[in-house]
Amino acid sequence: MKILVLGGYGVFGARLAKLLVADGHEVCVAGRNLKEARSCAEGLGCRAIRMDRAGNLDALVGHEVVIDAAGPFHAYGNEPYRLARAAIAAGVHYLDLSDNADFCAGISAFDAEARDACVCVLSGLSSVPALSSAAVRALSGADVPAVIDTAILPGNRAPRGLSVMQSILPQAGRPMLVWNGNRWDKTFGWSKPARYTLPGGLVRQGWQVEVPDQRLFPTHFVAETVLFRAGLELAVMRYGLALFAGVRRVVPFPVTRPVVRVFEVLADFLAPFGSGRGGMSVAVTTRHECRSWSLLAEDGDGPFIPAVAARALLRRANLPVGAGPAIEVINLEEAEAAMADLRVVTERSVAPISPIFPRVLGEAFHVLPDAIKETHLTLGTSRWVGRCEVERGTGAWSHLLCAIFRFPPGSPDIEVAVTKTVTSRGETWLRRFGRNTFRSNLSVGPEGMRESFGPFTFAIGLKVQGGELHYPVTSGRMGPIPLPHWMLPASVAREFVADGKFHFDVAILAPMTKGLLVRYRGFLSAERPDDPKRPESH
Image 1 (cartoon, helix red, strand yellow):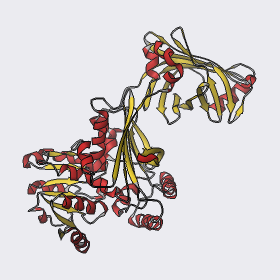
Image 2 (tube, rainbow, N blue to C red):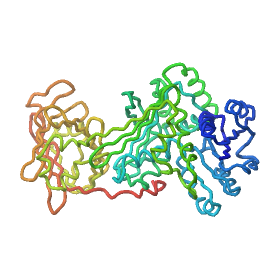
Image 3 (cartoon, rainbow, N blue to C red):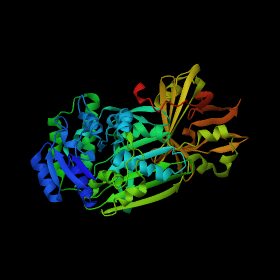
Image 4 (cartoon, helix red, strand yellow):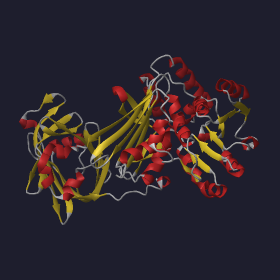
């Protein structure tokens, strides 16, 4: 095919052009800088032209496909789809490597025009969402994925383009929406780090950033939670960017070109350090197991990965007609075949799901009523809402301890919400009573269930009795220091079903005096999910 690659001498464009030439396509490298375009084209044995997206687009004529590999796509101005429109008008297939959520989603507006012109118009034919969606489908199969967790983790010695920095830096510290537990949650760019394991046991850290996956996958895959993170190999760069993000959360100054240049200089200074090894991880959690696919690119071949999806698609005899995001336009088998001549290793794994309550209770868990079991089978994030009554103890000792543990004030009837989130160690429970919140962390230890409130950790002797779940405190410690029995709070807590609803009745008695600290009792039901198609309403 005759293919015009705009930005064909950039970090990803040059590698895409190289792969397409290797596949026998007639490639033309295009961009604003004719000297760089010619230099790249000479090395590949193909043509080069000068072309500006904002200028004359007559060069499209005579080509079958145009691929925009330039970016940054969020900065395309008042006419972001000018090239796509021109391609449709010229009867040329349009593809791009965009990782911008708005840009990728917006391409669907041209579906009717693309179909009338019998051309293919796809945005995001890159690592996300094209490759990531192919991996999600291969992992989930016919099952509905509850949690989709993806990360891209490049090596430090891999070349980085200015457009990549211009895409990531404006997100740092700025609000973004994440589909989490069937709700659009507000978070911040470059936040909430997590660790991922790549083939060979290589562990890397990723931080939340916005890509098309978070916007598009909740509807397409009907997932409860969609997460995406990106990483930097060197800790000084990761935490330096985290500091930058923290400052921008307080002072939301714009990321201008001089700011980007400063980061480029710092990145170039640190370029000799680290390695050229990078990778990608996609994990899907179903009701029964966690399935993952990961890749490790050796010797600096990581920057080829964003070009793999386009290469795989263009190996087909016919391209799909219409316009839209590049979700499931290739399959994982095609993508892996397009990596066969690269120094890339892929790996799949499957691990059973083991929520903490069934793990602690064993067979006893299964005799509980369904309404109780459902609240303790969280796969990613689950949300529960209801009403309750709160009674507070009296006296200075009770008030002091309630203040330390942030227990709710007394109320005869108050709205209650509990958000349970799976972590690497167990679960975090965030309880909200009206406007007041307190948090605890649950995990499994040798003695059974543990619940931590700040520096205090208590062993919970979970037991099922008469169809109810009871939570007695059996021991405790402050940090590493065991607490004597007389310093332990007493817990008279149970979960039960009444009138077909999940109910709770929790009374906590103060250490030493055993007087009432707090008692809250009420009911919970699953929170009504948000509309995954309307993140803009939040």
